Image 1: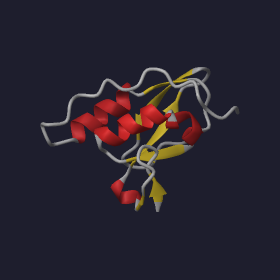
Image 2 (image 1 turned 90 degrees about the horizontal axis):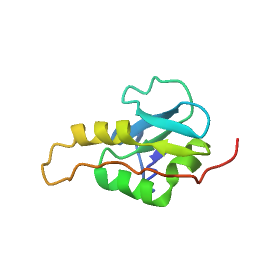
Image 3 (image 1 turned 180 degrees about the horizontal axis):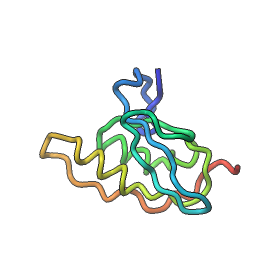
Image 4 (image 1 turned 180 degrees about the vertical axis):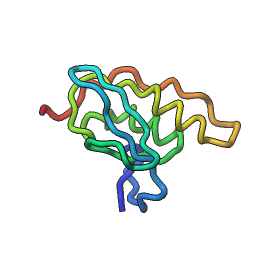
Length: 104
């Protein structure tokens, strides 16, 4: 069981997309990890643009990954958008600024 950082719903790990933070310092990007093999601390989100938008709104990435700084969600948003098969979802640009996080 894992918790989605967007909607906070607990579901099996098979239903969620794992992602990791890549990069050091104040700027890092979120890389999707569908095979669950990338090293580092990971977090999970539903592969749904609505959950990604909620996670951006809640500034959940820094807390979940224990990172401080600005998270670039472009790669993660692109992966979720590409995996979304319904045409009624708008393209997400990702959230730009998330300074909330846990100091390391």
